[in-house]
Image (cartoon, rainbow, N blue to C red):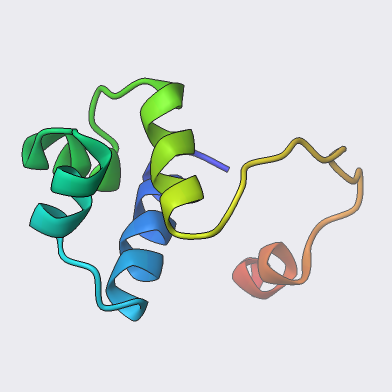
Length: 78
């Protein structure tokens, strides 16, 4: 997963929970521009990404990659 995809997922989760960038930035003590940068694959630390995920009730974890293609990858080959 690339940072762009992580940012898109964070934005989707934030919006689905009805949380605005200003609200999240205030509660996490981060600049709103930092929240925006994270959602747009900007230059932010992994600590910021983890804080945002935690705030939204999620966690990041490492999983071993499969050597087999995912269903999404197979669909994209068509």
